[in-house]
Image (cartoon, rainbow, N blue to C red; front, side, top):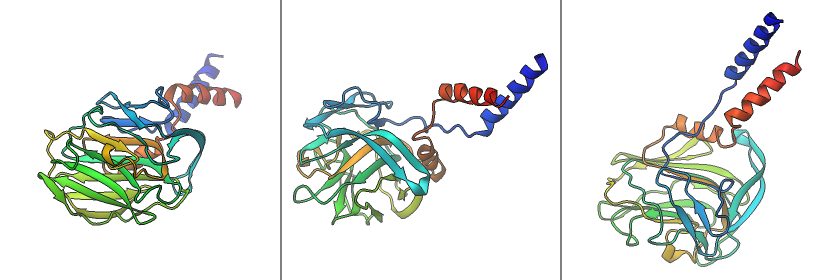
Length: 273
């Protein structure tokens, strides 16, 4: 009997450690997950190091639940929650009431999809900058035309020009985006785990904290130009993630908790005997 217990235990641990246990790269200043948000229609709680929350501006996007599929990444997950803007002025982030994000190197991550054309004269995407609007430092993302994502950088005390990101958001298609800024060196964009563009970087300083944060628009003052789309997960790091780390975050997006994995694996092993 003792030998059987030993064999079962050995098989259990071999099985457990032969299955890769992915984990989200730690240290995100801002971490928004629609599936873990008690505020629901009033705010989006920050699970990251900076704490706090993003308040609904005018009114919150609609909290929905559905299936997220990205075949190229092997993602097919049912019953996932996400926020969808149904009309203009449905964004998160109110000027002067956001977490503060001090960055030099930085990484932005989005699990998102575009649902259609513009709701107003433009549709924006997200903005992370210091108050006042278009101040000393910031990152502004908006849609160029119908389906391409563009970027505008404020650094060194003024607006800087950058090249397009080469990111295309097809209508109704979920995608994982990562944009990585290495201080004064480069801005690299990834879509679904693959690098799609690289361009020169700009100097960022932590003293100019990113505290004008808007999800679904460039800024609180431009929220009428709401992105016609959905967001499930958003993260902002104060470091430049590597391509391998970006892929690790993708792989861990819907990972099973370790406790659940232990009980499930043990039951599976016992069931084989």
